[in-house]
Length: 210
Image 1: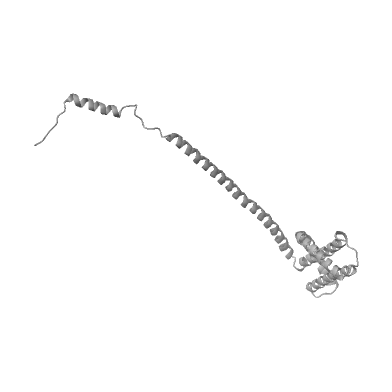
Image 2: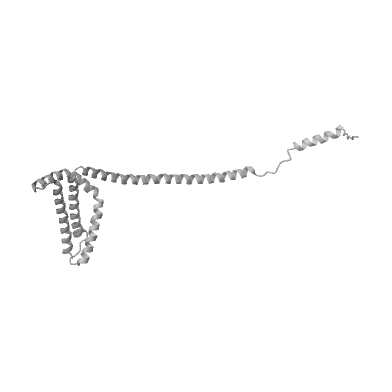
């Protein structure tokens, strides 16, 4: 047994119309949550953060890229000086004993003249200072002379290379003149004379001021 309820058509029409009017009513609106302003604020914050990060990233990249260039420039300059010195020494070795003797003669002349110049003009001192003070003064001056020799090593190597042909001729003449059996023995004699002259001069000046 079924029951059915029938509404008259005039009653259904107002219900349907009210339903559609409720859905299409422009007066009913959702509350404004301010999504547009929130999105703008978030976008500004993100853009400012990204701008700072990118700026610092660019500055770090610039500093990082500049450092290797500076170090590479310094290393290139150091390698250039070392390469020039090595090339000079290689050319000097081609002359054999004459090249070595040329360099030794220039070293002897440098040490003797620089020692006397520093002792008498750069750091003069009155005599009668005592043996211990004179020995200490000798060591200090020799340290100064050695430091100067490291700075002028390339210059002396270039001078020795320029004098090597003349030293070769002089060594041949010295070997024949004093009847040495070979140039090696003549070379050893000249080296001994240079060392002896330097030692005599150093000890004589030190003892005179003791």
